[in-house]
Image: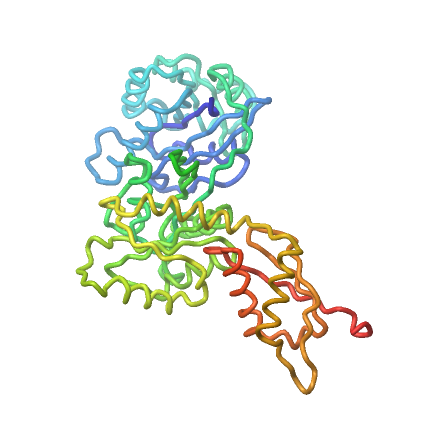
Length: 441
């Protein structure tokens, strides 16, 4: 059985994300004094006294709002409640019990889930503030006063939470492939993850910037086990003005760093842009296996030559990561989604590939025999041998007589030979050049 889930819910601006970050021990959820900042469900592992569980942060619940975003947040919070084993209902000591608190309490009682009532902003140490007793009126048992900023009272809160947990999995790491879905705003990243998950897991809107947090979605199917991370669209730096959006961009970059494979989403209706190059370049710099996914292909007017022409143009645009395969798909219709899973597994295998030194040097000897190493002023490059110390991405140490003679063009030639021989599709390759002692050459 997997780890149990504990969801933090409540109305806007009671400190849910601050408590979430405090309990998991690092800044994951975006915290900003603006209602509606946390929009999607955010999950992170949490440990307390030997018990492990997944903690879920949710957006503030506005029970009667007709606003498209706020109603979507409400549905996301309800989805988190439906999947939670224990619910932390967070309220605000300073504002007391509000009408919204009573409405949310009624909804939680109907969920038939164990609820722990948390009264936040009890920042003063000492005796329990008298204002706490008002929260008994919610009919959800004993209130736990806490300070999400300072951490006061969180120990007692977690003690009660773990008492209500139904059980835990073994907590061992699995073989899931972590896939970061990256790209500009409105490229269809959330639509793709929703199509893959088979549910409206992410808020989807044609308004750029809907997704602000990086959200994990676990998928198990006939192709394997995957964790897809939908990330906020990354805009040009000059466009990133809100503090919230700056956090979102940081979160997207963090998702890339934690991923095994990056799916770079391109909007087929707008084509390649300079910003696409910068976003993909970040994945390349981080050494991540990558796939270029051309979304909204169903909206493009096509002839027999359209796909080939589009592919050739992308190969030029993404020449710096020519190893990345290109897949045309539609998140809306589901076209080529199965191929995406197969491609993710294929590039992941290449990303983790380790090549024995003997086989590597056989390829090196054949490559040198076919094309002689370059010379400069009568001095010829001698490649003595090659070995692979690490994978993820495959990294090769090349021992030579003079590093200055190992020109980029010859490195590219060797890279291509290694790729062709060992099928290293979709992953960058790194070379580390080591010069043998000059006196021994």
